[in-house]
Length: 436
Image (cartoon, rainbow, N blue to C red; front, side, top):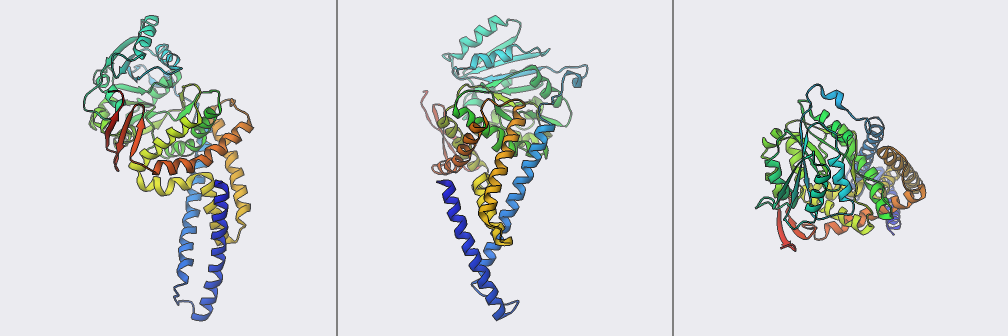
């Protein structure tokens, strides 16, 4: 239905453009080069809109090409222990936990098994009834040589539940380098060595990982991997290669003294998207560097409804933090809306048949997305090319649905058992807490 909708709009615009051309030519022959007629207004409006459409298309293609090149030349080429020199910095790893996910034990054990010379694990829990506490204690008995600390109860008067959990651990870290790693992240020595060696440079304030997923069964997991490996990677990689601030808070490491200079971790607990504001503040004090290894979100099978709910939350956050960009530019950067407005624009300026361009645009977009996902994966994909095509169409067509749902009731976000109200600018207040 979305494709039909775009095609109908496209044909209407093209017919309107053709009429505008004829009207304008007749008027000019009658009234001269510099005459003005109210009927010309439509032509100039179309001229501006078509020019903007071409600029958006050019920008998206530029970012896509940058990401395709960088994903091949930069990703999966990590730094190592040799780049660190003689002094290996200690790392405090903060793990905020709430409940037990299907693969939580595997993810946590990957942190216990790190062979990094000097690190500590700081686990954070909302209360002493959390089922993950016994799991952490079991792993600590198995890996008793690892320096482990548990923090229960969190800090008071902090709205963001993740920051609330982490604040006591952040205040108790013993090392300068702090790695915040969410519960769904799988760790490895390659990742830690790469991020730590990059953070050692004096002008680097933070190192982060581009979000990706492990291989999991199910169609929902396929759609999720396609999103993170193409739609998100298209801009995430390019922005970071160009030195722009684009970071998610799933896995990032920073210097504690740098964050303390911009108010410390707890201060950003007033925002639900603390990572957005925290990394922007750090960006003013140093470089933000992307790790060569994507973050492996390892949560098992994902449902399509669960993926869509997650996307709605993220769009609502962006609508409240970056309202103009998210409201007007973001919907036009997906394949079908961008193809429709660009096809009309090319018809307006060059009389190119819109459907011919649209077919070429969609075909090339599919090819580029498949290459990009494969580059980020750095290995064979679990799903077939047919499954990729099916998941790709579902992801692209659902993007408009996600945006519409996000705009409706845009200030309210459900996260776990809590409901929050996010104001324009990002400040957040707790509306309802089912845990209490």
